[in-house]
Amino acid sequence: MKGSFGQFIACFLIKVNNCKIAFKNGLNWHNKLVSTLEKTTKFNSTKFNSSMKTKKVVIVGKGKVGTHLAGRLEAWGFGVSFFTRQSGDLKKFEELLKREKPKAVFVTIDTKKEDKGQAAFGYLESCIIHDVPVITCEKGSPAYHAEIFKKNPGLIAYSAAVGGGTQILNYCQGRFWYDQKVEIHAVLNGSLNFFFEAIAQGKNCEQAYEDVLLLDSAESGSTDPLSFVNNERRDLYMKTAAFYNMLIAKDSFITPEQLRYFDLDQAGLKRITEGSDRYRFVVSFLSHRGPNKDQWEVKVAPRKINDDPFYSWIPGGIENGVRIIEGENGIGGKYTLVGDGACLVPTTSVMLADFKRLCYL
Ligand SMILES: NC(=O)c1ccc[n+]([C@@H]2O[C@H](COP(=O)([O-])OP(=O)(O)OC[C@H]3O[C@@H](n4cnc5c(N)ncnc54)[C@H](OP(=O)(O)O)[C@@H]3O)[C@@H](O)[C@H]2O)c1
Picture: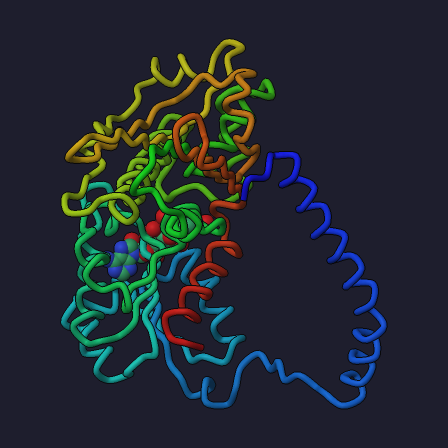
């Protein structure tokens, strides 16, 4: 077509007009059709069917997430068995799998500092051996044991591990980054986001920490603002490694230690919570295209965001978010997803959605 840009626009407008006409004409027909259907058709949307009632699932860990999830699964018609630390070791867990033959296992344990996802990995491995689908919200295993996820995509789901209710991994998985430059910036820890939002509103560390405790979304084990910030930062580094391992890595994976995780001291916390500057922990993944190999730069750091328009997409409160800029100068588009990161209902909703998808419910 020789057409100019003007002709292209004209053509587009004509198409829009045609659509309008078609829609107007179609409306009467559509109304008639709907009234016919109303009289004759009932859609069956029962929440569960009787065969589900006899199905069993196992939840590993009986903390906040595990308990809340159990209530929702029972309301959905599943019989729930818990496997706790008191239930025994992995041998006992495998006996339970053989005996109960659960439809799926849910791993809802926390990641102890020295454990590095090893405990969760053990449960995942047992499920794979026994061919039982497993859904996890724990982050140590995708951060430190990524291979098992890559090798068993049809048996393990982990959407709640990064971005909680927002499903950031699934959103990013749907994009194509192989032949263009890409920048990904993300807020991956809702509690840290909430804490720094409160600081930006003029609260001191203690007040901001008290607000976080009311939300009940902090990682286990914190006792004061400094231990809270460090626990959440550790969580953030695990999520960063998990994001890279699950979405970007082809053969070699990274760990939080390779991202140079270190605990902040009181002076470090003071530096980023005093004064009028606004800080946020933003994670960035930047691709550098080379002739033979792509390289990715990963940054995890408190950023001074102040009123910088570049950071205008950053959500407030407890929310997580991701901003993707594709192509040179964003020629491939700029995309933003924002939503709830932690909290029990969003997290368990994502785990149930994973269950539905993995088990074809
Ligand atoms: N809370 C949220 O909103 C949220 C959102 C997204 C993801 N998550 C993730 O979900 C997981 C659970 O969070 P939570 O808030 O429910 O934590 P939680 O209340 O501390 O519960 C964790 C439970 O797991 C148990 N556990 C730990 N290691 C175990 C093992 N090896 N075997 C059996 N049980 C074990 C703990 O028992 P002990 O006390 O005996 O150790 C505890 O009962 C964490 O990985 C967290 O990062 C939470």
